[in-house]
Image (cartoon, rainbow, N blue to C red):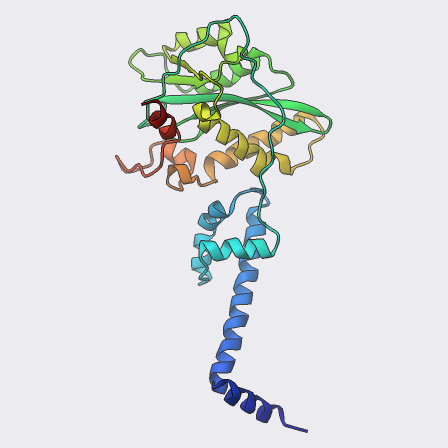
Length: 299
């Protein structure tokens, strides 16, 4: 019977490598497998709170962890690793229409075709999205700062009545003072909620300019649509909710995670709260403008 060491020597000669190189290769393979195992465990840990966060965002959140453990893995390699373990996320289709624009109330022009906010509280975008729990739908009324991507106002309701959108607006406006020198635009679709007398009156009381979409193209309210998708696809739809009270509690937690922990590519991979509170070097804006495509089309 051939001694194992002699057999290994012959194999190494056959492939033109030394035993030292062979063992180094084995050790590197083991190190890689252990590193991947650590990364997968950390990904699962992150997804306890961010259950459907995408690979690009995960890579950012993993940077400190990988540096601490001396793990070298690129974004494409992370994508492949998640794919091998069935951890990639898939987008879900939108099924419910929440906008009713065929009404007699006054509609306003689109004021943001050539407008790019350069600081917080210059442009708020509003929208309503549905959230299915059990056998019924709930509705989330959202207001987002277009510059920082921070959700500044929200309300959860069982109906699409305007009073719920007004509550979200009041939350967004509560930190602001009524002043005529503010350059703030409120942009939304032409839904009856945003055209209602009380909603418009509240905006006018704060001297806020009113802007609305014109043709129903999602790009006309792209940031609001994107925020809707993130909340539902990455968070809310991952949980089984059985009551309205549970839904409210979860929504509050999710918006806190969104505002304070989730990095956004559209704001230089920072978190919205940091950008909104002006924790940046002056002029240090490195992110893209969601409305640029619209501006180009309309110029």
